[in-house]
Length: 482
Ligand code: ZN
Image (cartoon, rainbow, N blue to C red):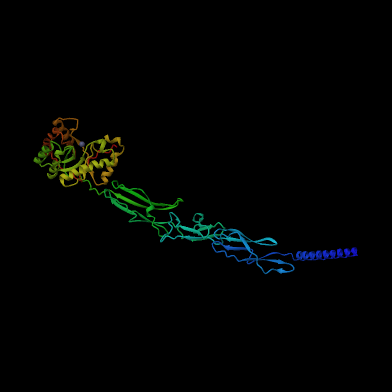
């Protein structure tokens, strides 16, 4: 009995264990078949692209558990979001969503692409009334480039200038490209040059010439006169044709030019008239000086007109220039300084010396004289240190309307002799046999002055008329030697 009972209770326990094991097995199988896990529900796309600078709105995510047999649970799990989207910085941002449950941790991801798809903007400046000129071509008026993401891109602008337009292009850091064009007017037409005043101008020597210039206007109406180059000058002291050329040259060496001719005409000169009858022109150089007053007294006593080629050597006697003029004598310029090295150094130096003396003559007489005598005579060789100066002065002075006189009778009072009788004989021997004589004496030599009265008496007795030189008198030019 005891054994039977033992056996029965053992088999009951075995059955219970078997049933329980089976139940556990079934539960386990059910659990495995359900395969429960965390399930994410992501709203929107897994990859989202947004424009930089715009707000990012999270579309939302929720998680539940889900199984094959029993489906989703009602209860939503807590979600942790990891990752930030910087909408101000272009890039790709990953956001991780994770949730914990008794079945473990699960996660999913979303990628947000922040992009710059907006192209930069190029703004062109326009300067009022600007138009490119022929000489400089188009000069950039200015431009700016701006990008909503990169900011100022002006420095990055590529500029391509063509004949008829400028192309500006720029790319931003995201590769968005912008290109704008500025059309250019045709500025290639050669400027036209318009000479102000006449193209051919005539003036008389000694008249001041001021060039009125030239105007240059290009095809678009730009005034380029300031860029004109002027070549040539007018020497208004010397007759001849002078050419003034205005030119405008482009960088390529092409250009335009125009030329004006200025013709300097010699001042009209009275014709030389041979004096009627036998004539003696007494001429006195280098005064006035201490003896000039005495000479004037003699001439006055005989009513003889003479010619004085004056210098500035003796200021105390300048007033005798005025007296001689008032008494009917001719005043001519000789020189202020009588310094050969100085006056023949250049035309300018000669003319300065001449003008200085002319001024003294004007102060004393109220008149300017057109008559003069070269120091040393026109044939002098002391000026040869400046080759050709006498030839140039001869032309210049004549062009300016001045008439110079040499002499054909020398008294010899300038070094050859200081004997009055010899001087007298030199003069009368020179005058004898000539229909007209220009006698050279120096009124700063008292021994020469002393011969004048005898010469006058001799001349009168031999049928000569004494005259003062004027613009029609014969000039007794020696001929130029330099
Ligand atoms: Zn002299």
